[in-house]
Length: 289
Image (cartoon, rainbow, N blue to C red; front, side, top):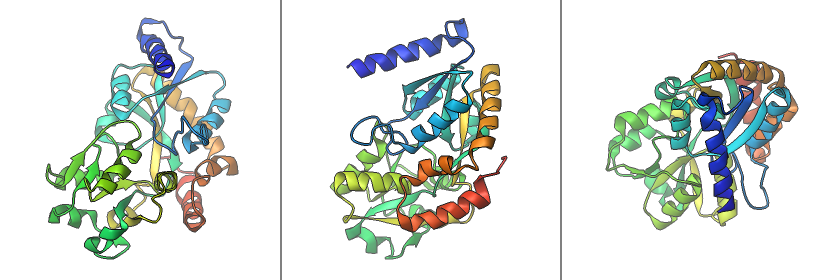
């Protein structure tokens, strides 16, 4: 209850930005309860990779007063639309988001989203390690856990928009999104769901399900790196435009450093490290768009 009251008070403060209640140098970071992006409780509290990266950005943006507020993606959209003085560290670009937010140069690169399936259903997905999401959606035999406010990059988002139906999508939105999809998978309410490798490792170990699940690479996500790169976003206002300019300067300085790269590597297994470091150097470290 105390935590909820604190979050509510924080939201009241920064939602007053348009009336002058909040000074122009206040920046509130929106953070979703989605380990290991952000971890709010437990033994790994504060070790989420977006928290670690935000800490580095705050040092570079010391002329701002930094605040933090827990908010799911629907709340992100509401606050962007209200032109509150808020930013998010790592979002995929989507047309509806670009209407309400200014975006930075690439702020993060992560390994692309994969499908999580139960080991016992592996053969029903073809018994292969890479699958075509388009083909699976067109066949309509599997039900996918889905949140329309969450993005996994243009290629995957467009496939869900074009081929997703009420029969092959189970839509859910709430806190601890990946945790709830794991539970739905265990109960057979969904046949698969999308997740990022690092969150899957975190949740599978946390729930003791590591030996019960498998991850399948998505063919459409491997054909380009659009689904690997995310961007900082701030409300589409003059304040947000200036904040993005400042964030860009900080990112240009931070991205080539080992410390910034290590924030995400903290949650990778060894087999993923080589692929990630190559992509980081080739695609991300000096990217400007």
